[in-house]
Image (tube, rainbow, N blue to C red; front, side, top):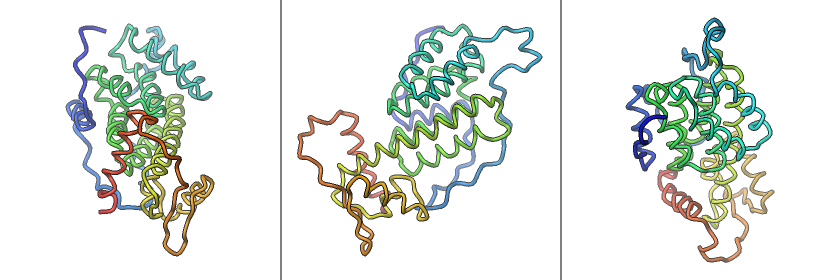
Length: 279
């Protein structure tokens, strides 16, 4: 690495702006209507190679990032996210070829690992310390957009961005099969962890909530409403079919000292976004 790091943007808007400076944004897509069907799979696009071609690899030794990919894959499959973060961070900070496209073999899993454990600031730093040529890579752009939506807890956008990333790494044009499988699995894990955190926040923020609004927070369509009800009943919520209203179980009374700062901020974001979701 060369030179001191540039002070990172401090908001999701600035994160998106940083991404736009390196690659013209795709044509804006209209925000999905509440409870709309899942976004259709995008057309395949040409994805720049993430590793050298077979011919080039015969004359060039593998990079640190390529050598570590099997270990990262094992850690991801085993759910050892803390160890994955430690391994990938160490390699990313000490790699000898920081502008090599193979660096994304570690950056992709590292960013998703941070998102799964809900540590957004470190995920942001990982992306922003990339050189300009890697910030503009389509994979980096997908990660930028998912991070920005998660950072501001734009719930419907989070699920849409996650689905776009999942489809992107599974398309035939994606140039690295092993990495694609790793990222697809980790994206699915992220959605599950994000839903769980959101459900826990709804339990604290609401005394009752319409089923349709809970679906939006949790990223489920009308056809998937039964999943929301099943999860709620399993967590001792009540559901009134006549009013289509869910009632969370009573939460023990405690002071805000029992909550972390990030949890309190998330609770505030839930409250702040109610008007937008109901509009």
